[in-house]
Image 1 (cartoon, rainbow, N blue to C red):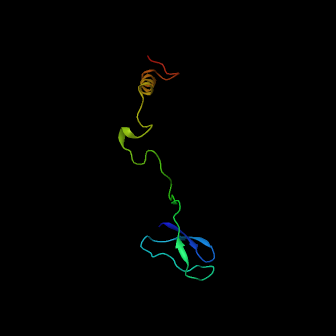
Image 2: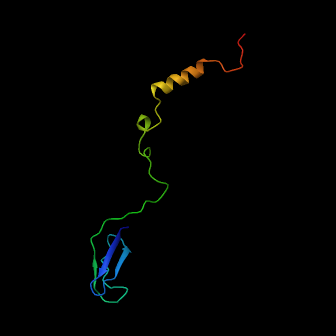
Length: 91
């Protein structure tokens, strides 16, 4: 739901209201009780809920950052697999 900002034309009181888009604008000022509120145009604000957004959230396969081996990393893995472990003997 968007957050709207209002200001009273009579007393100058400013407030923010969390409203549905389909809701009508507020009219009565909570401070002076007069119907003199006007909606202000201001910078939009929003809330991020949940665990967060990550670079890999909407990517699949090789497009995911960090999931694809570089040629150098692949060579190192191959070298480790081909060399015998320390302390092992071959008969």
